[in-house]
Image (cartoon, rainbow, N blue to C red):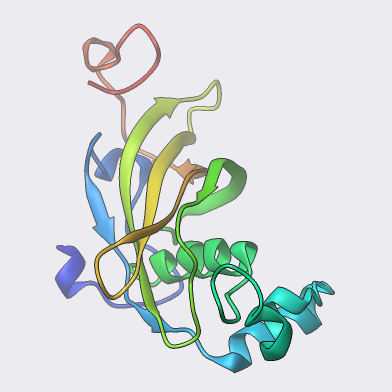
Length: 173
């Protein structure tokens, strides 16, 4: 089943074995509104004036309010789940190398793209590890954020991986 024909069900049909290294996944977009900034501030307690005070933000280098960096990252993670590939994730392991490269402004439309950069077995035969390099792009196809996200993913119960397909560092060839 291709990404274009996947249905969002909350339970995925994609297992650890189903993705190949360098495979790319693109999530849908969302247009950032004032409501996103206010709700994020209320949820997290991040009431920094750069995000919420138009008068103050106008005096800063970007000249207007910008979205919270962690909001941009969270939206990227969440939007990619809509592709259906994470229904068999049993644990989110974290993010690394987060970089905010450009501001995300109210009215910008962002979407995530991710490339599978690590797929390795674990000591447990029923799970594997995926790591994706994420890029969050705006409506001008400018990269606004990058990070790496890692996940523990269920394996198919009947799968046995040929050891010849595993590289010395544990990644699938």
